[in-house]
Image (cartoon, rainbow over all chains, first blue to last red; front, side, top):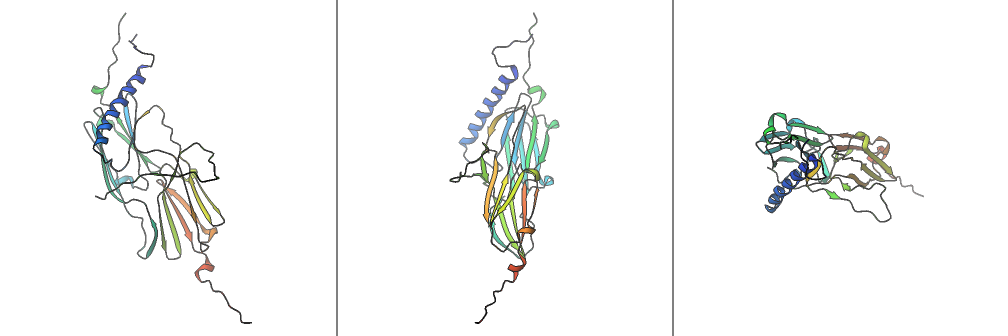
Length: 142
Length: 131
């Protein structure tokens, strides 16, 4: 059997802890003021984090994801719409240009197993926690 | 690098209109431009595909509605900078657009509407009869 201290299952507690760490980290970010582009959401469970960003109309070939230690950097660009030369603009609200965003996670990332998907303009990057960084479950023999 | 500060804008509930989905609704950012005899409309609707978009034209009011489902199983939201929801925006079309020839495609979360000008609008002349 393994030792359980609360009613919540093991992975729940672990997720709660991760969430807390994440919040602390983000608080320190917030104090710095400006958030970057694109806006990010971070989902987590005990084994990995999932970072998502809304990046419609970006060519996946123009997206670059790099991982170093505990940080992940998303960069890329979106061009102006392809039009002829003789056009008249009525509205011009959509963004264009280059972006780069770095985020630090509260654990070392297993860079070899990072996975990314781009669907319907939403980028999802799965960042597994490095094996040596994962919490160990200690069995208590009885 | 360009300074990008894009914040999603949430739609306000219109008076007299009640929503039937308990979802947040955002106003998509658009580009509208005219090239030759055609007006193009591009809208950023990340999370929406060809099946989850509704385009209606009633009288001269064009309404774009995109439905987004954001179910994330096996994960808890640890940190959030943006919210996910449906999209809705309406435009008043000029009479010049040929309604029957409007085309719409959605690709990588971008809606593209092609609105060709009506034949009669290209050269509309009103004959004045002398009495």
